[in-house]
Amino acid sequence: MPMRRLLLALSVACASCATLKNDATVCAEYRDLRCAAGTNCSLDRARGCQVCQCARAFSVQPEPQQK
Image (cartoon, rainbow, N blue to C red; front, top):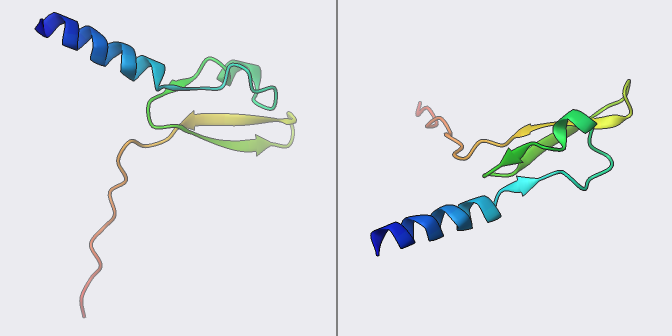
């Protein structure tokens, strides 16, 4: 039973990965990029397509300094 739960969790995690495979605005070498937390893309004007990287899963904000 624990093995089934592990396989289910892994399949759900893979299914939820962000993919850019069908996005024609993304440069070809980034279309196979798979990210669990989503992607950050920006336009490369020289190439006329978007370059992408995986977003951070957790954003750590510094604590504000008190005066």
